[in-house]
Length: 96
Picture 1 (cartoon, helix red, strand yellow):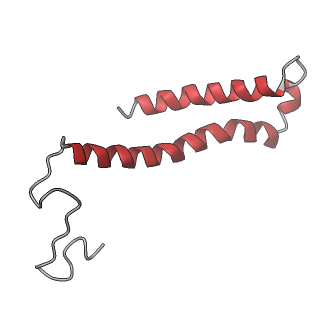
Picture 2 (tube, rainbow, N blue to C red):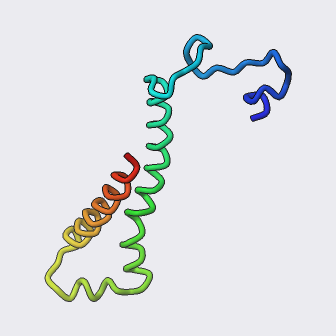
Picture 3 (cartoon, rainbow, N blue to C red):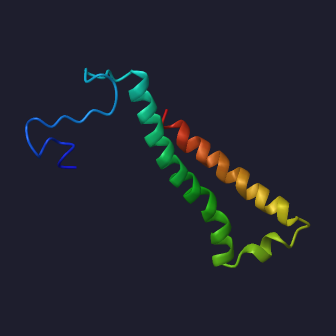
């Protein structure tokens, strides 16, 4: 990080793209970098949101309660997935 900040001398210049000119905030390069960073964090958040409900059901041993009704394993996991997916959509719609 020190080299990127110019800590090794005054002649050090680090450029991530372009021709050394100022990069505008709404330039395609800046938008691409921003979307890449948000997507990376989005994958982490989405995996945390989607994995938690099923794990919590088995941790607190509530899954036998769900299987007292005629529900298939695919129906149970599909319902959990769709519910988590809708929550993730709501979370990510607040980012835009």
